[in-house]
Amino acid sequence: MKADPRFLTQPKEFWAYVRTISQEVGYTVRGEKSIKIPSLEATIEEFGRLGLSTTQIVGMDNKLTDFGQLLFDYFTFRARVLNDTVQGLFMKKRSAEAEFKKLKKRLNPHCPLPMNKQKGEKKNYAFLTGMVNMLVEANIGGARCDYDPRSLTTMTHGSVPLRTLSRRVDGAFPSVVNPIAIWEVKEYYYTTTFGSRVADGVYETLLDGMELEELETAAQRKVQHILFIDDYFTWWECGRSYLCRMIDMLHMGYVDEVVFGREVLTRLPNLAREWKAAHDALGS
Image 1 (cartoon, rainbow, N blue to C red):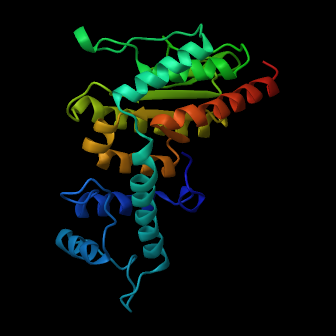
Image 2: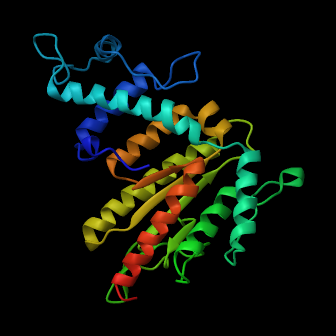
Image 3: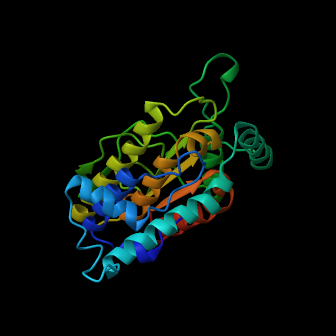
């Protein structure tokens, strides 16, 4: 899923309001498995409780300003895209395993197919990571790809490191040195609660996005940053507020696309072919 252009160019002040209203009024509807659209009344009440001004949101005529209208348009968009589209894209363990096996049989891959980090009966392939690797390999025409980078992502100038990210990513094309694209995979098919490790993964993506933003400013080069996530229970049953934050990060420009669940099967082949075309255009 790409960002909606209406919200992609908003200043950081806009996102400060989004975060404050979401945090104080709530991301989700209590007692329901759905994303909340904050009301103006609740927003005014919470801002009053915190001693914050609402003059940028509501004018003297008690009507929304243009800025306020855009804020509530965004909240409506965020809720609808998550409730109506994203929820239906998430897979459960059984369906993810079935899709993985179908791809493995059809593509006969040579790329790495890593195992998950579980033990005992839960030990199995990392289904989403495996699907990502197989679909990338099938659509880059034999080009090089770092499917499991062991080094940090680095941009260079004249063969000298210019910027290096703080964390290792889950994949890079064609390499972690001067990549065209990097990606992260957050799959949690065997989790039974929304633990701190899952929450940390969201903030790791934010860190990567902020570092990439600084890198692009310094190096004047764009690195596409993609996030793949899946597991219905983890993300929809337990982590809906974090999905809101992912949509926010997407529109803040910290990630170029978030690919939800089974969307990997239709979206990733196109992305990988775009990366290959960009690679060929560079004459690498």
